[in-house]
Each structure stands twice: as C-alpha cells, then as structure tokens.
Length: 555
Image (cartoon, rainbow, N blue to C red; front, side):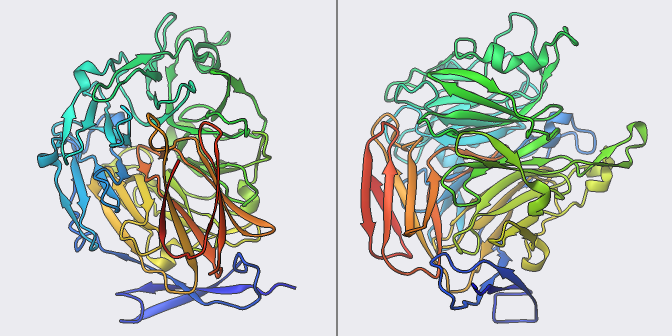
C-alpha cells in the first residue's frame, strides 16, 4: 500500500518561516517516482506586486456604466520577447490608462519599457494581447486585440528592444466590433504560424466573412495575413450554430477563447472553442478542413476561460472550461435556482473523445470563472488548476459575484482536487479576467500574474519550499516556425510514467502563458529521458542527467 505524502499549506503574513502563520495539512499523491518516503513540501504564495515594480491599474473611461465588452476586456501576454532568458509580460491598461511592457530585470523586479519599445498603446480598451514569431525571424512579435470597434495592433519585433507598428500593412481588417482573444499556430500546415481570433458579439449575416482564421503570408520583416475562414470549412463547422432552421436570422457569434491543440493525436492542430451563450465546440482539423465534432459530453454553457493540458498523465490533452456561474438563474430576479451549472473538466480518451468528470473531481463549483491555468504549482508531477473570478463591479448585473474569489484546485493524485486558494493566499477578489502562470523569477516554481478588469494587476510569487524537483525546457524550431508550435514533448520519469506537454501559444481568457515547458518531478532527482516530436515529424531523444534547471533545445 502506498503512503500518502503530506503537503503542508501555509498562509503567511510574510515569507515562510517568519511572522505568524496558520497551516493546513492536505493529503496528496505520492511523489512521481513512486517512493514511499514522505516529503514535506510547503506551498505558499506572497503578493509582491508592489515590490516587483508592477503598478498597473486597469480602468475604463465610463467607470460605473461601461459597455458589456469593456467589462470583460483586458489581459496579459507573457514571453521572453528580448531573449535574455527570463519571462517578460505585456499587459492591457484599459482606455483610461496605457498598456505596459514590463521587462524582467532578472532579480524579481520589472521595469515598464513600453514607451521606449514603441508599444505604449493608450486610449484603447484593448483585449487579448499575444506574442508570437509571426514573420519567422526568431523574434517574438505582438498582437493586441480590441473591443467596441477600437483599433487592433500588430507590432513587429525589430530585435533591438523596439517594435514597429505594422498594423496598416498587415491585412488585418475586421468588420467585427470585438476581437477578444487570439492564438497562433500552423493551422494549414504550411510551416508558418497562422492566427485565430474570437469575436464575441459579432452578428453573422448570410455572406459575411467570419474573419476568424487568418493565413500567414509573411516574409521576414513583412507581416501579412489573409482571411481564409471560409476555405477552411468554418462556414459550416463554426457558423451553423448562429444560423439554424429554428432561428434563421443571424445570431451573434459569442465565442471567447480559441485553443489550438492536437486532441486526436494525428499531428495537426484541432480547435477547442469556448463560447458565451452557447455550447463549447470541438472542431477537428482534417487535412486543413475543420469539421465540427458533436459530443454528449459537452454540456457547458456560458463558458469563459479555457485550459488545455495532460491533467491525468496519460499522454493526451485534457480540457478545462470555466463558467460564468455556478447556478442557473430565474429570469428577472436573477436568483439562483436548483439547477447546477459550473466549470467543466473534460478528460480525453486519446482519440479526441471527451468525458465530463467535473463533479467527481471536485472542480465544478468555481463561482464565476474566467481565465484558467493548468500548472504544477507544487512540483509534484501533477497539473493543478488556477482560475480567476468576478463579476458585478459597481453594482452591475449579478453583483453577488463582485467579490468572488479566485480558486486554486490542487491535484490530489487520486482523481480529486482540493481548493486551497484561501489557505495559500491567492484568493484574489478583484474583477479577475486574464492571467499568466509562469516561473517569472526563475526559481523553479510557477508564479501567478493576474490581469484584473477595473482593478489592479496582481503578482503572486510562489515560495514553494525545497523537496520537489523540476525541469524546464525551451524549444527552438526551424524557421519560420521558430517557436516549434505543434511540437509534443514527453519527459520520462520511470517505466510507467511520462509527463507530456504540447508546445503551443497557450492562451486562456484574453491572456497567454509563456512557451517555457515546466515539468514538476516530485522527489525524482535523477536522470530523465526527453522525447520530442517536432512539428514536421522529426524526432529528438536525449537524456538529461541534471534536473532543477532550464534546458534549451534546438531542432
């Protein structure tokens, strides 16, 4: 019989080891190497927003009476844009402020360099910032979405710390009023990275262009996109829900988050789409044509955020969808009824077929969820779930969720999760929208950066104690796909355990996680085997003899 390891979770007034503290003991799975030796690991977070130099407050000009899109716009994109080995981030400030580019100083602090870099967008609501190497020159460019017919922006990274605004020549022209979230990947399998954009609230009339999939026709130094939504099969697979026999008139496209992932293991990016006011959708990529996959397992409505990853360590990608409410509501009174609605956790059978295990795993009751991350916060080899929450600011609709706290569901390793957000101090109660979960301070554990709407950005440093090990991998692919988007990576810990990740633009809700692959190893401190399947099918196998470090691998 395997013994359970005790995870001591500390809620601290200061750093672990000082000040007064309270603790809770939570049973979690044995270390991933299968040893019976218990390891005490202390998981704690500290709010270091101010000391880290982050002082952004997101605000909109209309204050207590904003438009619906402005109430859910914003977001943050995290990547090492200057290639100095640490993760920077770009964050939306709202139309009453300026967007900021926080350059990581490598010592736990950040400096806003947006003005010097030429990306200090102001007087724009902004939404869904995303980094990607669009023109294949090895430098990460920047896309910034918009709502309420504000301008979108495309900035080309010049490689000298500055960006060039190339929006006018990029070909990105929208009839849609909102471009909420974006993601990049080689959708048409021609070697470069294409763009998918969601347009919440976009009314689709007969003959309208969907303007959601944009083929990349860029060359180095020249960014150019062409709308190929119709020829990719999206007129049938995507828009059919908005024009039905029962409702022949145009209905708004209510999509929020597009996620590209190879869910069926055939080597190409499929599309997982989270939609407000409608069912979540799976669009399977078959030789460059998308076909909608219908499943009785897809039951969520009013989906907001999305996280994709191998939650059960079986080698395929699972899917988590946050919902806007945990209860149904009865019309004008807006009171909870007996009907239940909430977050959904979909397990993949390896062939792209999903089963809903939200209730049995204990993750359905999440309040009003938005952006979500799969990340191994305690480095035990099991992905945990963090998501931000909130609605009803300034007395708006559903004000009972105004102070709804974020959730941190720790994976117990026995097919259940436990919410410990309040215990570890990451129960933020602002109007959470997007977030990014990365090792910003390069100490081997995953930190949390929150982009709130009508509120301050919040940065939680992970102060995980020693005891569990980790490995970080950074891949460089062949041009023009220099980020190796679409690669699949397995880190083998033992004969019966391999940790699996995809390389993709990992977006959740209006936000992006960095492409650094972080693997928690539990108590395993020995050699690991790394297997990489690159986007073109080429294989790389290697042994990594020393863990607790970052490894750069080029194709």
